[in-house]
Length: 392
Image (cartoon, rainbow, N blue to C red; front, side):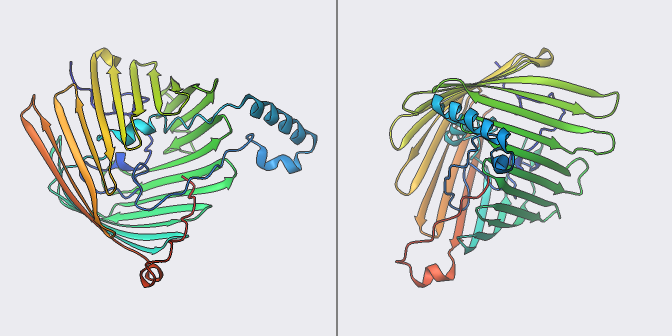
């Protein structure tokens, strides 16, 4: 059994996928200029922002048609179907538990200055050195970033030492509707990109459309649309279609299918993704106790004559001031990482990975220094202001 190369399951080899967080455009070990949604640098406040229908924001001006939409929405609410989540975050719980999205090698240092909590306003300095990749050592890097977030708008930008500029902006247009744009300008050929995206979240369904490097002249680019719907209180199905156009003579489309099962107590989730070109991804997540979670992931690739698969199991332990993650996969890799907060403004991370089959090892070390707004430091006993619910 061989290890499949990490790739977006919806795209054939060599085709860049629309980035979810911007991390796909960076080399291993480099600090991400985009927010890590599974591990944000600032507190997020959950808020119900699901629309009763796609045109709910326009119902007051739709007249009789708006009343029809109201009755359809009432019928849907009577079914009492839960929100299934988005297709992009189908495996969110598994990704938050496994170490794959959190582990790094080399040394990192982050300095975060919080200028305001509501609205969120932060500046960050991120340093990285000693990291390695499949191509060899990664040179040291520095990234300066800024974040602004309110209930309606989220903006983030970064500038690294190679003069690569990245940006991300989200806007909540109406209840259940969020538009997004991501972009990067870099000197390296093929590294620059722009992505336009719109999210819609209903009471029991979600839809998303996105375009990567769209060209208004010849229609070139990659276009993605997906939809997921709860069928019962425990089961949801979805579909995703991708259209890629490089020129008038080079275009391709493909379909993908999604399935999600959730237990009655919401402490266990199983997902499956199947792509017509021969890629299957399955995950299972379970909360064992208030502080312990376990997850398993299986990736199978049978495309282009390949027969590859990889299985990963891991667990996460949450303590009062720290989090410990450990995992093992079918390729013989064992990894673990400890994140601990030694003081209110100081966090320390240490992790390691051993590849028994290749007799290789990696080690990562990181520190994070944070500072609070001056008004909070003047009165440390006062409760912090509630953070906004940024449109993510």
